[in-house]
Length: 95
Image (cartoon, rainbow, N blue to C red; front, top):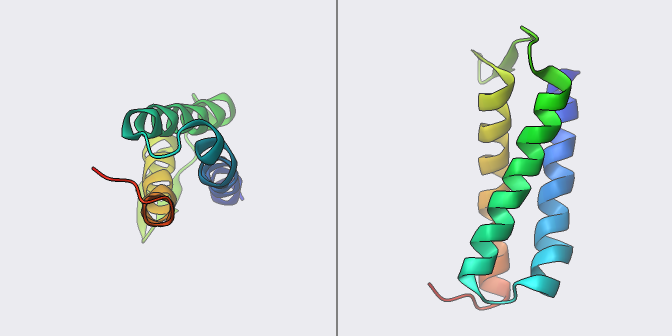
């Protein structure tokens, strides 16, 4: 159940970031995209830390036990990378 809570929080944050916040605020500006992405990651880490900091709850991913921090980081990268690539392709972001 803990894995699902973190997954849903990260999914909602990433969806809001790439569907609502970035189109309104960042557009094609890569600096603003990076800042927004860092803030979104911070929100995910903060949400997970409020719930799981100090607990020894193992988060299993691919048969490996992670702590809440690394689980949140891996899930965020797994969900945010394809979302960013979709956004960059759709909005013609140049690097």
